[in-house]
Image (tube, rainbow, N blue to C red):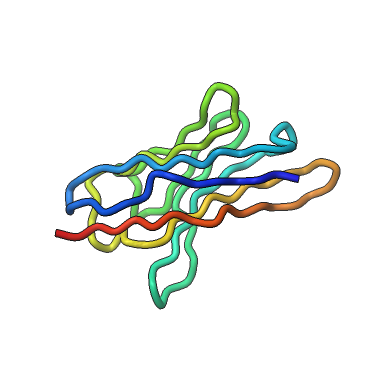
Length: 118
């Protein structure tokens, strides 16, 4: 079992920055991929960024060059550094972890609200 807790959301003006954190606990050694998703009101949940065990990262086109995903040295926390924020980045941001032991399963956090508004 893996538990995920996100934090760091809030209200920020356009052009501002925020850093989200997602702390994983439990069987963290079984995690091989961690992701950040977001869901805006009335829209489907979409993948924002992801990072794997060896540090490979991938970003959606809408955030490429503005957001950076990284992990702690202990691999128990994944961060999403968000810069040059736009109103269209407003959403609930979710952390997702993929685990492969004892069998494949994915886990989700409860989400953290990010609002970009002047």
